[in-house]
Image 1 (cartoon, rainbow, N blue to C red):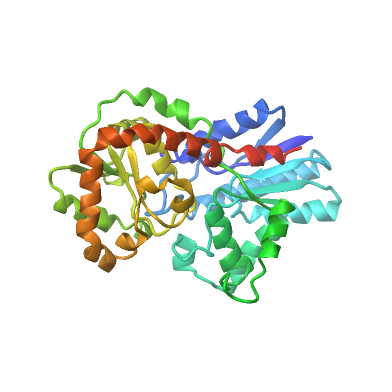
Image 2 (cartoon, rainbow, N blue to C red):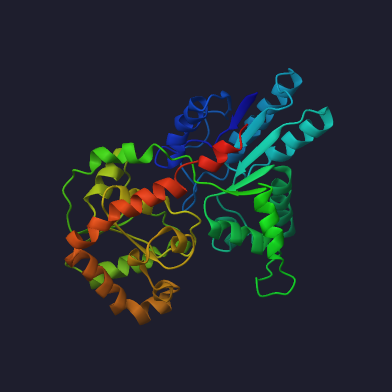
Length: 365
C-alpha cells in the first residue's frame, strides 16, 4: 500500500510551511510508504490580501498536481488499496482522481481535510461567491468523491452539514434528521480529527523563557471577518497597554514566535473560525487566549477564557459593550500571574484533541 500525499503549497509564514515536511514525516513514522504529489515551486509566493493563499498561484499549483496524478495512473504506479490524502479538500483534482479511479477500476481511498468553503458565510468564498450553484455543487461533489472527510471541530461539521448538505435548514426544522449526521460519522464519511500539528509544542517551547510585557497581540489575518478595527479601537481606549497587529509589520516565523511569547494576551473578535491555530500557539507560550464565546472557540476553550459573544458580534455591539470588554482586558492584565497558572492545562487539552491527527492516521490502513 502506498500513501499519496497531495499537499498544500507552502506559505512560510503559515503552518503550511511546516506541513511540507511534518505531514510526510508523520506518515512515515507510522509505517507508511509515502509519495508526495506537489506542484511547482515557481508560483506567486505572496498571498492575495486578506486570504490564506494566492488565488491565481494556487490554481497553478493544483493544476500541476492533477497532471502528476494522471501520469501516476498512466504509468501503472497506482494500485488498488492505495490511499490519497488531500491536505486541502477544496481541490478540483479530487474529481479528476475519482474519474481515473472509477473508470480504470483501481479502488483507492480518498481522504480530504476541509478548512473552509462557501458554506461558511464569513469565509472568502462565502462572502465573495455565496450560494452560487456552481460553488455549492462543486463542494458537494468533492464531499461525495471523498471517502473520509475530515473536520477539526464539531462546529465546522455542523456548519458544513447545515449550510451545504442540508441546504441551510436549521436543527429546529422538522426535515432536519440528526440521525443522518450520526450515520455519516459512524460510517466515517465525516470524521472529526485534530490537524497534524504535533510539532507545535516542541517548536514553541524554546520561546517560553522570553520575558513577558504588557502586550496584547492580534495574530490574525487582516480581513473583514477578523474585525481588526475593534482591536485598533481598544488600543486607543487602553493606552496603558501595548497593542500590536502582527500583519502590520512583515516578519518571519521566528520573529512572530518571539513576539507571541512576549505577549500576555492574544485577542480574537473573529466572526469566522473553524479551528483557531493562533490562539493555540499563544497558549503554548503562556499567553492568555481571549476569545468570544462562539464558533469553534466555544468547544475548544474553557469558560475562563471566553467573553460573551454579543460583545463583538458587530461594530455596533462592540460600542455597546466596549467598557465591559476593556474591564475584562484589565482584569486579565492586572491578575495575569493568577490566570496564567491555568493556561498550560488549556494548551495540553488543545494539543490532545485538536492538534494531533489521531483519527486521520487511524483511517489509513
